[in-house]
Length: 249
Picture 1 (tube, rainbow, N blue to C red):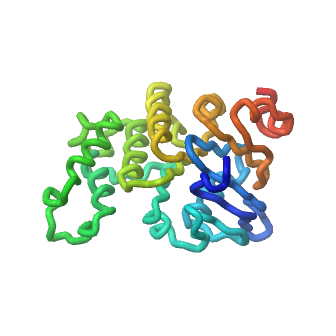
Picture 2: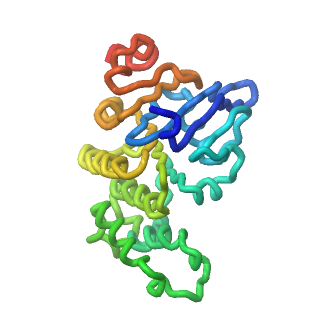
């Protein structure tokens, strides 16, 4: 993909933990569609996401978002630029309702979001946008249910919905289908597909069947380095990837 079409880029990005180099000289570009990051355990996938979202500072290298360097911004600053992230463990508020979780995320992007004397009902478009997102998630009928009472799969859907409510320009999903049954997995795959038609999605996923079915681009990390990158077909037929990761898949 041409570099001017890439929304999120890294240049020679590395991260050391003492004597261990978890990410080594990674130059990566994320553009439209679904870009999956795969690799065996310990390959550096989550560390890379932590670098991209400001939860870790790189040992060396740079990160660019829409052409502007964001290497040393704090996580909240990166979030405000338009980069959203969903973690391996859901980060919804369990005691709040499904509606309240999404509404707070919608409200967080408004100038009046921290004026506690203002009713959210008076904030233009908050209720409508919240319901639109819940409808997209298939959660509108469960709007008044506390988040803790949702199934695990629906909590993951809600978690992604909270990220979408912040109006991101790119979203990073860390193992969104982990621990799900097939029904919930199918729902998340559809949500990712729908989302990627509007904004770029970067995805860490261990289920290779899912990766091959929904990805536009796949990057394979191995021992902190990029081993290969290409389309699902190119990755499937790459001898290095077969040997190091797919195991003759």
